[in-house]
Image (cartoon, rainbow, N blue to C red; front, side):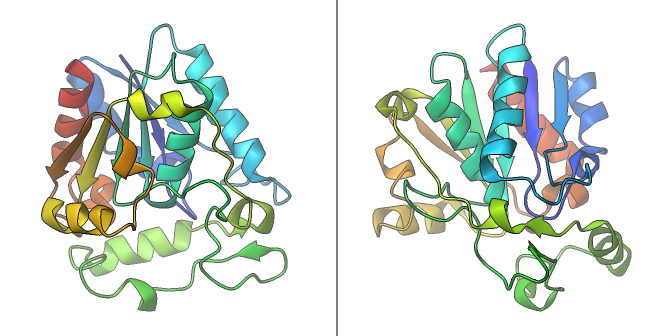
Length: 227
């Protein structure tokens, strides 16, 4: 099965480099995506441009792919399910909940000169980054690409109720499945609250398991694809 890998904010497709060979060895075809404005030099990219790139990868898959979104890109993966509910086999969400209709995609940090730069490790101290050593932090920070303003502030538009019939796997790295269930029950994940087939998996890592737990992450994704 094709497994489309969408990185979160500031990252391009290379962040999956340690996951790709593991998925290949497990019999799948990983497709790490580098989205417009996320490593191609297009500082004027929009959220619609990024969604179009994801949908092009979905449409190019020979069968129904597993679409994987990390962090803020859980919303992009969910947008793909909304736009192609008949084409997406399953969605896997790593360390985040998709934004609901009408919400800004990722308007989390200050915009500087038309883009949202990586804010440093301060906002991510604690469970998010606890398993990152100094070298990993330096590598991620040095590779971080400022997110174009039109991506960060792009408005999420969801329209097809059939998205709730697409199976969803929620991978819980820096939080536990029980915490995720509590947050969803309290209204913090309105989209996931309506999913007909929602499965939780505890990953026991920080926010970037593709860096710190690539083999375990690949195994979980391969098992989801096999199922």
